[in-house]
Amino acid sequence: MKAAYQYRKEGLLIVVSGPSGVGKGTVCSALRKRMPQLVYSVSATTRKPREGEIDGVNYFFKSVPEFKRMIENGELIEWAQYVGNYYGTPRRFVEETLAQGKDVLLEIEVQGAMQVKERCPHGVFIFLVPPSMDELLNRIKGRGTETEETIADRMGAAADELKQICHYDYVVINDEVERACDRLEAIITAEHCRRDRLIMET
Ligand code: 5GP
Image 1 (tube, rainbow, N blue to C red):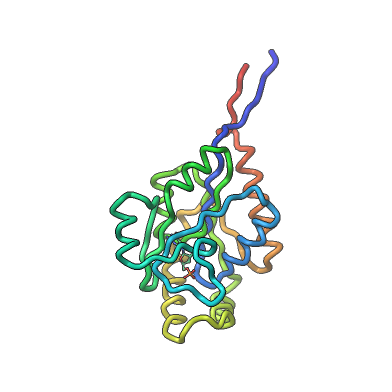
Image 2: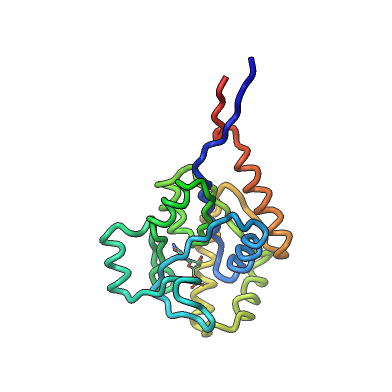
């Protein structure tokens, strides 16, 4: 008997976490260039914009009362406090984009990723790690955007975040951006071919 195959129409929800400074932003931008069909979810945050960051592109920059209103109105799929600021993922955009069959990329820290995992267990959870903690410190310092105190806070947060690695499906070492991208691209391609995404008509 002839079989017809069809993959589920809903897009993949891809969650990338990793300690601050690991290069998530750089790797995810490079990945989006390679896979322009990936839709990036812009988060809301109460953090002040860094130089060059644009409202609505890098983040939706919110005041604390505005952010709390978003939480109360159920507008966020997940939210977390990270090193003194709030961060969260707007729900509607993600749900509508997935329903259109497009893949969505969330670049979020671990507390938020675990909330997403509870709500969307079919998501793909990827943890990006630095080649070493020394290298992570060099990268945070090299970015030149943080004070000594925030650097210490971010290194502390990184150590805590690394303990959560067991909750992720994949671990990618960011030793070199293009190589890390190769691995992410391979993961996404493989996830699209999973048997449980296949609807078979016999
Ligand atoms: P940064 O201040 O360096 O832009 O981000 C700090 C951390 O917050 C990073 O680990 C980043 O991935 C994470 N983050 C960014 N957006 C969100 C979000 O919407 N939700 C959560 N939970 N974390 C986020």
